[in-house]
Length: 143
Image (cartoon, rainbow, N blue to C red; front, side, top):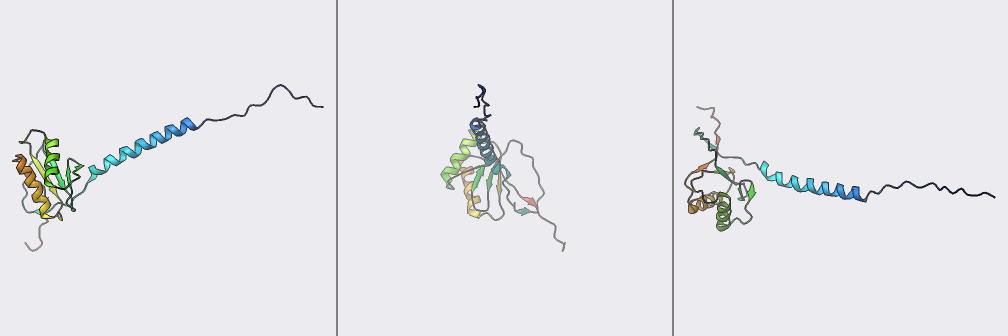
């Protein structure tokens, strides 16, 4: 007859539930922070112009219009493309400073009405320093 000893070998167990919670929290943090960076890399193809006047505007804020006619104010999209919501977004961003210069960056393929709507909204709010961003036109070979 074999007599069992009083010692029993304990099984080693790792509790991974808290590790999973931490990993899911980190995953959610990285997913949420990477979606905010997406709009800062917004690219538009600017129209070309012969003029080479370059004026540095330091405190200017940017109204960007993509080729689909969507508006972005300082990399934040205006959800409703109407004139009233555009004016509200500009007022919220610019505050009471109407002397602040505004740079209008519209894609070369943007519908003309979208550019006119943005200029109309800025004019109705009292902004007087408006510039339209362009790129330098390539010199033609025939000249």
